[in-house]
Length: 297
Image 1 (cartoon, rainbow, N blue to C red):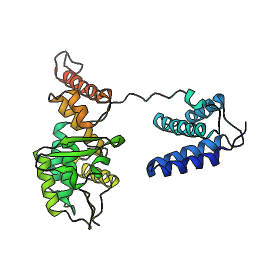
Image 2: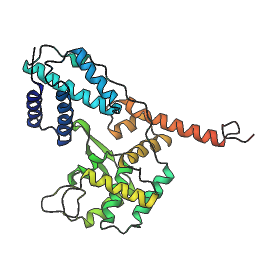
Image 3: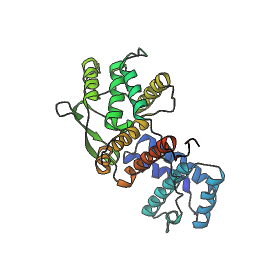
Image 4: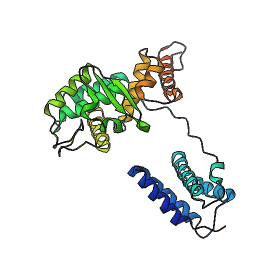
């Protein structure tokens, strides 16, 4: 059977647009499917052997495992569409093996380093245009363990200042309630006193034009402060989320509670922080115990 994949992929992307897929998802799917269709240009309907050759070509190009997994997910979704439309009679994409992600522990700044950075942000050492906003961004990222996209999406009505809780809309549009502490409450109060937004704007965090501050701008903000105040350009918003979870665990919080606060659907996702804590313990042991690897003979 001979089919032309490129027009079908464009129809698939049009369907995704009608279903309100995000611009980021559409961009990635578009790139992945154009490459996929080009690989099979003029070759008819790919069978399982051909798809395995395509997958092998991704490895040969030296692509990272996350990129290969994403491209494979794009192709699988495309084939599900082709099956629904009756364009193909079988779905060989579902028989392809998904490469396993390498097990990597998240980089987590220590409690002392994190608190020193937040104190320096609060001291307005960089003399930024919106120091109150920047401080509140840091305090809530670390104090609540939010994803940067969740923080950027916060609206005024999501914050209950009396009860000190935030309604967070996380992945899969799931909502959760997250408490915030005294430092975050103080920073948030100072920011809301000086916040200047354009008419009708409900975003908690706004830019110099009064519109919603984007998650990209928040990433740049965190990187700027981290580089200039802590000398660490690698620190990013998600590192503060990791720090939130790891420091809670180190001080006795249970995994189930941390899972709820982070909005993880699976406890196994949260459990990686126990590995981070264990790694830190081993480092301390090796450095300090008489029988540790760094002990003096």
